[in-house]
Amino acid sequence: MLQTAFSNSTGLFVEENGSLKINPASSNVVKHLEYFRFLGRIHSIAVFHGFLIDTRLVPLFYPLIGKDLDKDAEKLIANAVKDSIATL
Image (cartoon, rainbow, N blue to C red; front, side, top):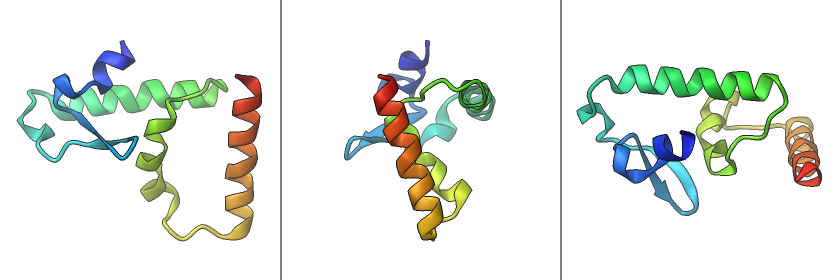
């Protein structure tokens, strides 16, 4: 289901440089805000329960945590990525 939601054919996201970005033209999709809200909830639940999310989505979260990350935050993110890779 999520692979379909993130495909270019839905018009919600575009793939650029190996990561997903919100399609600037996504407002042309009927009920696009409801789709984004639903996908956000699904990912929030997944992260809360310790499931891995598609790494192509990680750049979407940078604005939420701030563009200027201090060294502690960078270390925390690096450790989380390392643990996720080890889990795979």
